[in-house]
Image (cartoon, rainbow, N blue to C red; front, side):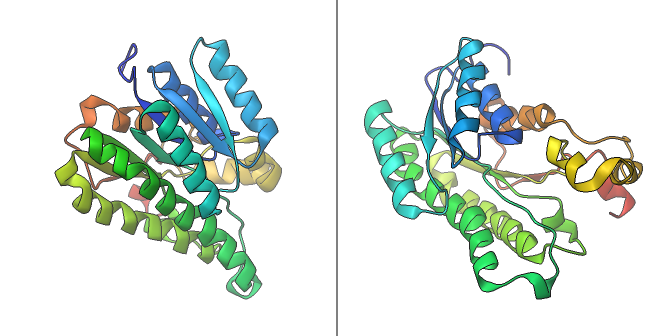
Length: 253
């Protein structure tokens, strides 16, 4: 996946204002794709676009709430009209809060499902007609290792990420005849500034001790998996869930 192997491709990356979304957008742009970077955080998106432009690559911002279906459809329709189609969708946008079942009310639950499930569903839905027309497409959904293994908190988050795995399998079967591949990323712990703020130094070290490789993933490492799944080298891979987690699943966590 070197050089400009995605030259001429149009990619949508949601949740691209920071973290993995930003590194996914930068990596696809490095490969030659024109990136439409979505997020509700305009300031963060501006930083993402500045970093992409600083590399000599191309992108534009789409600032809206990913749970707003009308905004999704308007943005995607405009992008297709201006760029001729959409080839790659990376459904990365998400939120996560550790809460007990009793602490999750209806509004919280709906917000979690709206961002993760509704956002992913309708972003893909809006792009699929142009992918079918081109007989080429890549949909990459970001789930979580917790959707596979569970967790002692955040059941609304896990439900949403589990639904994304279901969508991945269903879409892979439905869209295969159109040469559209659909895969999911289910990462383990990914380092960010918020990790240290939320867990503290001892919490960070405790998590690292549970990982055979002894550390957190860097966002850029996850973006290499996204880059591979978006590439021609992954043309025969669909319906799969790839879980970069430093070996954590092999020790039962």
